[in-house]
Length: 162
Length: 191
Image 1 (cartoon, one colour):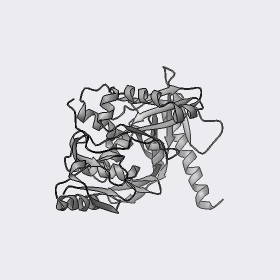
Image 2 (cartoon, chains in turn blue, green):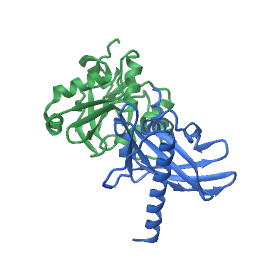
Image 3 (cartoon, chains in turn cyan, orange):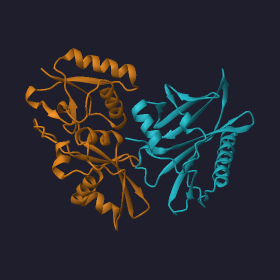
Image 4 (tube, helix red, strand yellow):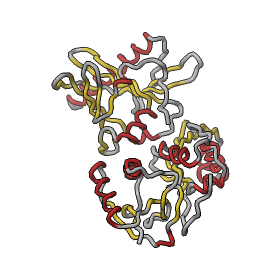
């Protein structure tokens, strides 16, 4: 396995565990699929025994003036599926030796931002999202992702308004 | 002579999103606009403009704001023009396990319904339990009609008024059910 691929797998697993740790701390139980079939998805049964799917996409950040940026790639087919059961993306960002930020955003909300505000860019069937983090904001193009920064409550996040 | 904007072979899934975003920037209502069937496929109502210059401006703006090119401006016979919704509705489906299908309206189709029928009791999604999802998708067209009526809160006639519906599976990238073939001017009805 190439060194780069190796590092990517370790980063991905580390981000998943960090996200799971946050969910557990906040009183949400988590479960990891026994067999990895390619999706790093796990489920969070809540008090009503309903299930939320979670997809974790981790990124190492790169410094830039006044903050840092991180890039994520999300398959378009997954974004466009009916949001049933609900799926939440957790995007952990590694910066200066720690998990500095988590973006917590529901699939339907990300799809809403893509459709209505043309966020990111589309490449090879993926939404490529480059997010610029500063102390007070997270942005892609003219859209602020600050409302989704470390937004663990309510769980699961609410769907977007029409 | 009226003009519309399309692509060779019709407008694909992602290109359609860009197209509708541009319509929204131009303030064109999805629920009611001068329209004609897509000359390439006759499966979607597209907006029409009275002169070529305006259609060209729309393409220029589309190229400026969005990633897709190869748009084409086509003449439309005046008789094909009517006023109404820019349908069909796009219904997305995905398989959940072996016995369930999840259905949801594309967000732009929700917008279309809202613009035409503001009080429609839209559902966000619908999970259908089935013995045989393949049979349901291939043969149970009446049941699919009912699924769409539940999702939209509209009658069969109202769905038809919007241009009918098509069903698409984004995971398999498969058109499960194509929209109706549109013919001639369809008079818009009052809501």
